[in-house]
Length: 316
Image (cartoon, rainbow, N blue to C red; front, side, top):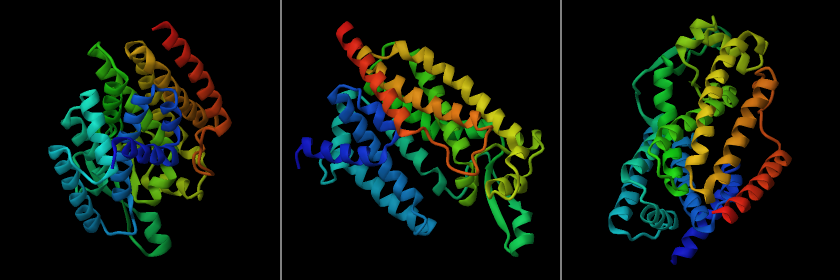
């Protein structure tokens, strides 16, 4: 297998699965676009193993363990039959991506496979017990500090990898990339409240629920469209306001990124922040249907991004 063939496989995976991310990849120079696709394909493999609910948790842990050992062996030897590993090895060397960041990236995608996590408690939904006779439990972060750690591992680490591909010199860019990643993940959490609740997961901190007088039962009922979403608006508005604050870091980060990559970051931030603003405009109704940025809007942002990329390259 040639390196070009390995990158081609990763591009296909990214084009098929990356959605919002792929729009930002399109405005990067080819060598950086290839590296981003390799990182994404690697994350996608880990996510797919972690999220395969057709397989029991112990089996998923076993499959993940074997996959990780294969990746680490490929990283040590520089030899693999897996196109994703081949492309990722090249991207890691080309852009000096530390092993520790890739290990943290995997930790983030596999957190939900852990039997226990710091700062996570189990709560029981008594309403479902009364209605169905089954006791249903949910994993929930006790405080925003615990949620921040989760956001760091599943999103901020991705940002720290990305800025190494984008290119930067000012070390302040790393903290700003971390906070931008938190903004993205909080947006995802708001969008996915219903889906996560169906999977037994609540990513809104328990302390925030209690401060806004929202019980786990009430949140679950809203997620199931059995109670008006207005009962949890203040709770969701709190998380949205936090996300908005973290998005401010993206504005500071943008000029620190190499000129040929600024448009890619701008596209990604514009699409994700647009998703947050759409949730807010819907008065936080993330329950009746999944909120998304229309493809027409994404294409318009992409066109603007391509224009910015061209101007940046001409001016560099």
